[in-house]
Amino acid sequence: MGEANPFTLVGRKALVTGGSRGIGSGIVRAFAAHGAEIVFCHLGDCERAWELKEDLSSNGAVVHSLECDVSDEKSVAALSKGALERLGQVDILVNCAGIGGDKPFIEITVDDWDRMISVHLRGTFLVSRCFFAGMLERRYGRIINIASQLAYKGAPRLTHYCAAKAGIVGFTRALSYEGAPHGVLVNAIAPGPVETDLLMELSEEWREMKQKQLPIGHFGQISEITPTALLLASEAGAYYVGQCLSPNGGDIMI
Ligand code: NAD
Image 1 (spheres, rainbow, N blue to C red):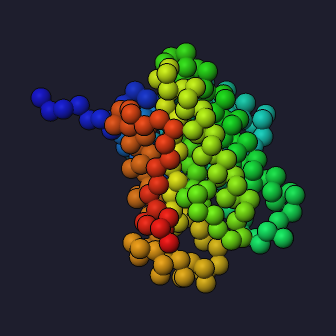
Image 2: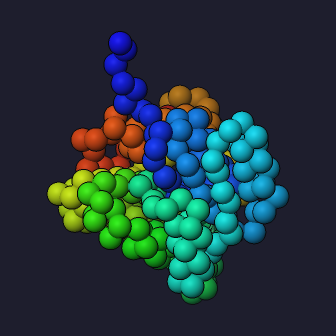
């Protein structure tokens, strides 16, 4: 008899926000490949959401897609209801929904600021609070928040983004104290620059400069981030509490 696979998610129910493309879609694919049943949400990305759901479903996975604005309380309540109707419960939550915003500080409007903080920080709070109590009750849960190495490092033209991501790191640490004694593990991932639509919003000049500086010599691929989510979601990650793991190609050092 071989040893049990510590990365298996068979029998687990997962909700991934921002799952239609980019890092979130990679996490949905990895979780499905390891046996989880999944609901993912997106905002205004119906075509790609449908394609992802169809692709995985046709290969036998149980995957559902819902639209939701994670910054909106009513929309999140509808997401929670929809996810529970489809899955029965949520054992693993990945808060991945996010937006970019490339602006010098003096051009950031109050609306820009509020939107950035709302999608990342309020969204992480709103979605987590829908499922935390159930996880505590069942004495099992995993919450994985997608932060960014920029939470630590900062970056010009991204003050609102960096502030939101630093907030997510603090939220993760604080909530992990309340969850860990009851089997609910809360951790974060702080990726470096990953080749997604969000990164493509930044200027070509910046991207060229950044690739040259990166010790590893290339932007992160989605497949280089998803194994960290799988680790934290599975039994292999059973001793991680309040951590922020950072696959970043060495970018944190420059
Ligand atoms: P992406 O633009 O490819 O995907 C973003 C996803 O979030 C999409 O599914 C989109 O529909 C969804 N979304 C956006 N706003 C939403 C909202 N209000 N409600 C619900 N869903 C919403 O972006 P990505 O690069 O894959 O980023 C995913 C996460 O990873 C984000 O939190 C981002 O900040 C973080 N991150 C990205 C990088 C990078 O370099 N790409 C680096 C570090 C951290």
